[in-house]
Every structure is written in C-alpha cells, then in structure tokens.
Image (tube, rainbow, N blue to C red; front, side, top):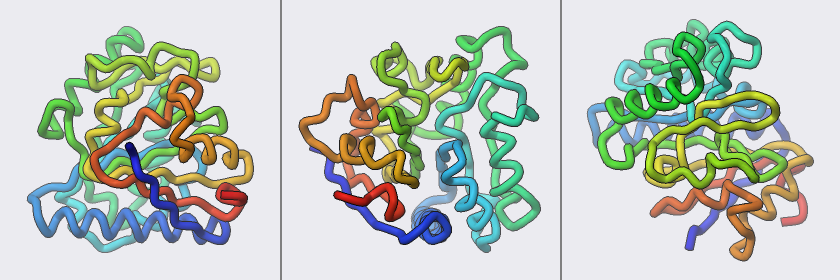
Length: 237
C-alpha cells in the first residue's frame, strides 16, 4: 500500500519556496550518486513560481535531463503550452537554463497518437529501465482527481502497455506519461495548492478511494509519496 507523507506550507509563496528547495536537494543527492539526474515536471499554474526559483539554484544543471509529465497537443509557443511555461521560468536565463530539456513532440507530428509514440521513444532513450525510471517525478493534482493527463472516465488511466499515451480532457488532446512510468520513479512528489484541491487531496490519501474516480491513486511507487501542500489545500486533513 502506498504511504503518503505530507509537508505543509503556509501560503502559495511558501509552497513555491518549499518545492524549489526540495527539488534542488533531490537533484543534488542524485548527482552525488550518479552521472545524470532525470526529472519529470508537471505543468499548470501551481508549480510556475517554484520553477522560477529553482532556475536560480546553482546546481550541476548540465547533468540534468528535464521532461514534462504531460503536455497539451499545441504548438510550443501556444499560451497553454507547458513547455512555454518552463522556458519562461526554469530555463529563463538563470543557472537552470543549462539543463537539457527534452520537449514533448506535439503539432510537428501528424496527430496526438504519433506524438505519444514519439514521446514514449524519447523517454525510453533518456531513462534506463522498463518502465523508464525517473529520479524525480513532480505531479500536480486536479480538483477532479486527475494527475498528469490521466483524467477520470477516459482511457488513459488504464493504459499500461505503453510509456506514453493520449489523454483527452478539458477539450484538448494531451500527451501524457502512463501510470507505470509515474509509479516507477525513485521519488514522487505531489504539489498541491489552493482550497479547490481539498477534496481531491483527501481522496488521494484515502486508502479506500477508487482509482477509477481518482486516477492519481494509480501512482504507486516503491517509496513514500511526498505531498507538498499549502494551508488552503491541506485544511481539514
């Protein structure tokens, strides 16, 4: 059974600082033991502040490989692109710009299914293992219980024979890592902010909650899952 460990921050700014510090520490620890550190990051508004801070950390970024856990099937310069958000935060001129960013192939390919297949190949080349093993997997949590682009009531949460698939949610095709890859990471961190996430967070931590209703429950790594949450999201736990 998955064990969850929660660390609370007072507000969104404190949460961003805690997330940045935690990710930086994890990268340093990995690079003390291995030649390269491979991390997968989430999109969305909650982590953007954390990535801006993280990009200023003086780390051996040239030994870090960065991918996104999921991406909307849009052009890289689209306002909704997670890659664009990373370029404007983590990679925006600070030390973090020296990391190797492996963007999800999107509209340069024929359709979302072709992008998912190409992303699966990309991840397999970057990360050893079957499924590929990331050193750090940072995930968000939707108010409907989704994580990455594994939305309840869609096919993506049930895909276990590929490393990436198409997640269809909120009117957009998305390319997402599958549950086996999310679960294979050495360290999984959920970053959860805002009062709208209270119910989803409670469901995530409930051992009786079904993965069908809350696909984030499918993330079941060998090690404890760390949840970084602000006071609004964690109230009542």
